[in-house]
Length: 385
Image 1 (tube, rainbow, N blue to C red):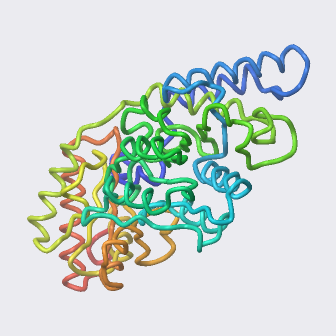
Image 2 (image 1 turned 45 degrees about the horizontal axis):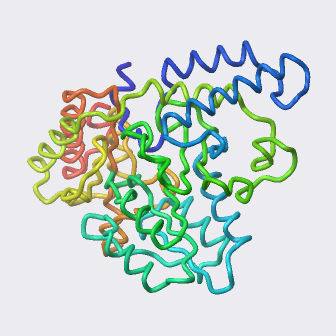
């Protein structure tokens, strides 16, 4: 437990919750058979899978027929754009925000071609204004095929106006897709079914890795698919269903809190301002996830901060885990016009439900000690780590 209280990278992945672990063990023990087989025990596994689909539908307020189980949000996002590519007209265009996750940005460019994908600008806090969505819809009336806007940003935690954007798109007859990977489990998921398309990932809220879901437009479920082969998922996603993973994911979502308190994060940011007066907190003027703080440190590279804090027992990141191999790869800070040198000083802290205020305070003090050692040119070993 002590190690987990020093883990501040919950936006990258979360530990498997006790409820999810118990559900997985129970599922593989009771219903390990292939749900697509025809004998009695396989039929029971299929029934259990469909019951899990109904429970997830209740959680996100959509009909279970609209749900497809996937390998995660990345697969779900690819399903959306691959399916869209097969039905778009020659002049049709798609809009995504300038701060989308790589699994949206790169999937859209791959399946549709970069020339057909427009980026919506963001405010100084990294938020897409509703007026920007309205502007794009007006300019592309008659050829707008889809708008994709994440619910909550994975780096800054900034909450995007996804419900308002979905309503605008509905008025214009344009499909709306929401990557809700960071929203689900941290915020209430009850209204997500209002979107035409939604993608989520179990490991972001205490479920297992390798399982997620997509919500499809009502009445069009058969037109959206990615994997071809067998008849699983009503032909929309071929491959033997992972009932145990699905059961574990749904149980995790049922068990996790709808929202945590930002008190610890706010205490952390105030202390960081005291320790480093020139630190920049990204998105501080926006509504944010309660657990996320994106910082541009005033000095030293993010890799030095990450390495030294890791030596001290704390886990943070340099931004999106899908971009962490690229120094200075923060999509959000780059969209805000940062210099390359500033990009190399970006760090992300994302806490979880296990953290109390004192855990955030300990992290801030660790930053202070690491900063003093880096300023003095001391190594981690010399500092006693």
